[in-house]
Amino acid sequence: MAIRMTEEQFELKYQMYSQDLFNVAYGYTRNVQDAEDIVQNVFIKLLQYEYSFRTNNDEKYWLIRVTINESINFVKSSHKKKIVLDEDIVRSTSDKTKENIDKDNIRFFIEQLPEKYKVVLILFYFENMKTVEISNLLDISEAAVRKRLERARDILKKKMEAYNG
Image 1 (spheres, rainbow, N blue to C red):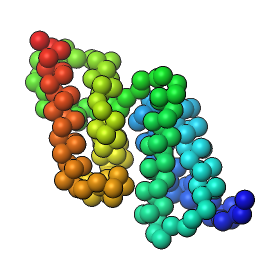
Image 2: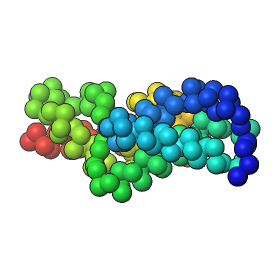
Image 3: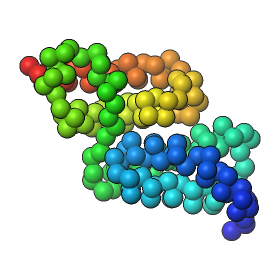
């Protein structure tokens, strides 16, 4: 294996990206140690990656994509159904529903979302990425990102309203 970066370059990349990657991984695992392990695996993959990136954004998007894939694989392999939780997601529900739904129930509802909706929620709410950045990362249109966010919110709202009766 050829070394494609110096220790100093690696340290700089780690400082630049590790917190963002941790946030993505933690959004899936909801466990600090698991998220740290995933980030470590992603940086090992970066060291082994044989191609160079044209820009820092290309590199960052690649790292986030690998982190998402690693996180999904971890959650599936460990049979841990962890989820993303953000209060902004449920703001559109009625006050009565908000009173009767605790965090565990919200986690359950988010856990039920299809993977494509969870991904955009993590990137949008936890990574504070703009829809255009998410579209570049996931290689889908910006309109598709906005639609997935809208559908995810709608699904959550309906599930919570139905739960509340």
